[in-house]
Length: 286
Image 1 (spheres, helix red, strand yellow):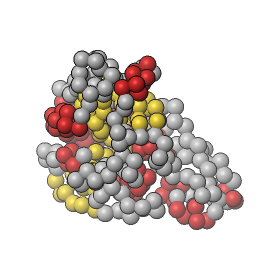
Image 2: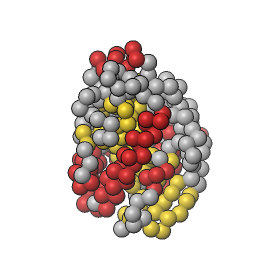
Image 3: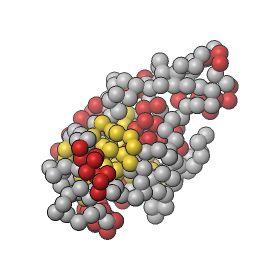
Image 4: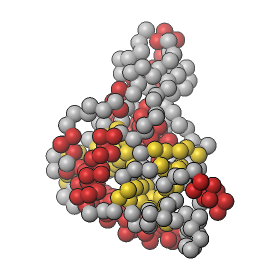
């Protein structure tokens, strides 16, 4: 199953059949909304509206732990995150797509790990995007005729406010490519859940650093986003239809927890082990 996190407009993929909705319970609370599950050819897809239907949740309020847990519980092994971003470079024009390979985390009010409460784990995160899934999305962008930048760094801020001009200029000095509010902690949690993860970032504006463009407004974001959604749908459709070509996973994403837990198995509280059984399986038993 391919998991897709993004806006409700992404569900309208041509050919999506056997559509059903499912509400999933998790040890970390409720996901953002019901999941929409359907089949595209032989592939099963699970869509999750990140902000809830009707866009009810701020980026900080999104329960990313529950969202990623729900996708894994349903059987997803690969997750594609779709989100609107601001461009931080002249070459990334509003309307372009970006497939970032790195993230910088400037959030401060979000739960970023499934672990704690008596069990400590440290997953490797030097390369946060699954290279195999990233290459697959590049091919899907090419097939859709989309203008896509297949590299770069995504700076994730807390929000919900956009940046000040001083902040935007500072971030430009960091040589980041796009700025957004949703890729983290999603990417961190996907790694802990041993899910392949990649982002399709939809550039909607130039943030507020660009002297010859007006400061970003929500009206501008929405207008460009509506234009981008059609392209994103086609990219997702291409990616899903070609998913069988990837075959079984051979990347390291599915083994991220093999040596990550630092707590002695005999010291792991039974309640913590039970809570994280979906992630740990039979590993780290005393």
